[in-house]
Length: 141
Length: 89
Image 1 (cartoon, chains in turn red, yellow):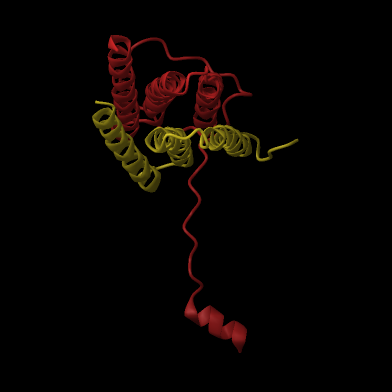
Image 2 (image 1 turned 60 degrees about the vertical axis):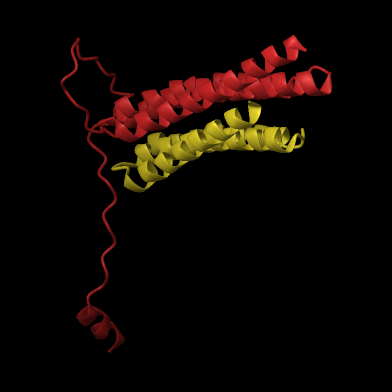
């Protein structure tokens, strides 16, 4: 009986910790000033939070249904493998598009290769303009 | 005990999803919106797993797996498109 109480505490702790980590990751993504800073929150905090929640679910189903439950471990492994890859390619995309970043950080500036970084800043797509009424009328005439 | 923990965790995840939606609407550039969408995928996996805990069924893990794979593949495809102008060269 004590084992079950202890396991319930462990599962509850893992659930709350997972929710807190996911919340912190999204808060970082909302509040930081710069795309390269914003990248840090979801790739670390949210991944750890989802791992905690999936392991809590695995423990719960292992305890209540008796047999060992592996599917959540599979999802956790998949997410832990793919999150660094996603972060890396998103950072490459940000470098390629020359997004503006804050220059107050200390340390040497990194040297970029030409093949990694585009030649100029990729502008945002302009808002489509409505055709002027006079031109439209001329076309119809 | 488990009930309360589940409610707290659900509230936090839904707040995280709301913040992702704010960043998705406000993001100044395309990679910001892409990052917000990727985080929304991960948070929706958490929601589905907690739905499975709430209803006490094992049915939803395949859905969570599918969402994880599709999120990874779609983020990768859009990043490739932004980097190279093409997905499969």
